[in-house]
Image 1: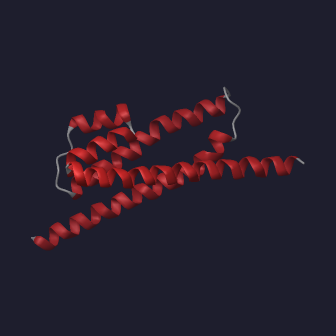
Image 2: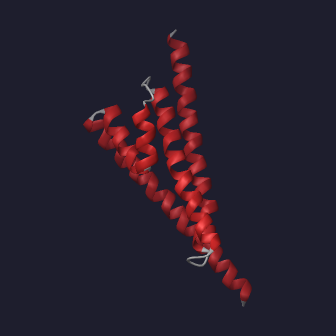
Image 3: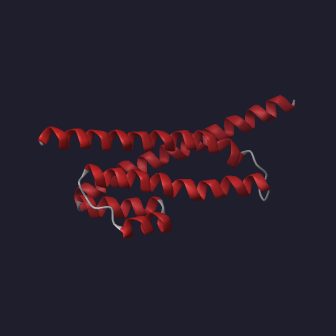
Length: 137
């Protein structure tokens, strides 16, 4: 029974890593779309809409797998928290599921991950814009 529990936890941990990888791929792909579009254009609207939908979905996916890994129920309130607050709901989840000390440590790690995702987003967008400008010369 203990081996099955360990295997389930490893599977959920792998699912969480896959979700983080998907977030990095999303940041790489969306950077050029968001930064390469003229403000107010249809392309910028679509990029913003996709981001508004994808970021809470990725955040909820990670929290869902985290609940399964730690054998916690996935409550309806968690779903609403992710839909309404997105990544800020993640901090609430981490504090509630781990306690204050461990929750703050996990929140600091999550904040670092979000900073890295934002950096990848900006760099991919800037490289795309620079490449377009270079082709235009």
